[in-house]
Length: 216
Image 1 (cartoon, one colour):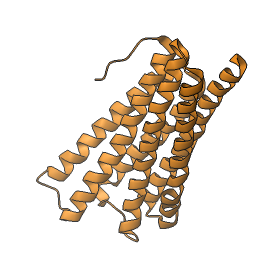
Image 2 (tube, rainbow, N blue to C red):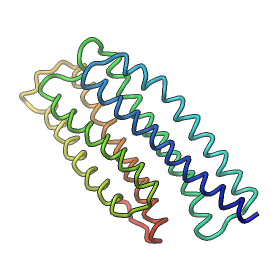
Image 3 (spheres, rainbow, N blue to C red):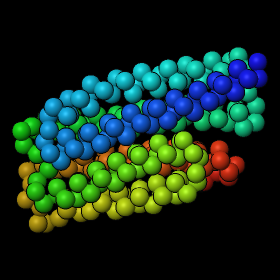
Image 4 (cartoon, rainbow, N blue to C red):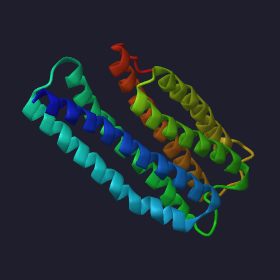
């Protein structure tokens, strides 16, 4: 029975990595659709979000089943409970990708934001993709150095997020009302995507070291 339990725990970890991989592909496609006004790619992201939702729901069912049957304790309990919380964050990251793709679809064939902000969003998108790929690696290895890297990259996204607000609220902003709304929403989606990754990295760091990283 112990071997069965350990195999189930391995399956939990493997499924988390699998979902994180789906999320990384999703944000990669979403940011390219956003920056390139690629409606076909946007439609792919929107359709594929159901796969992320289904995978997260299946993982949750497995974790709850383990809790009910195995009644884990100590680190094993932390692994299962953390998996439930990480699954929820990954699902929300998929939603953020979908929202970014939806903006691209709504504004097609035009680009979502004015030219003056496109460089900023291209940089934010690249950082989100890097964070998502690093998150897959973190879930595979529990390397706390990767968790720190994710937090540092999130700081860069936060700074870019603030710069978008400074731009749209500034006196030189020439955008229409819809441009202001789109830029604000898009920036928030990029920023929240990274925030969820930081939340996951803190949980993994706790599992690896036993030390909880407080919320900033």
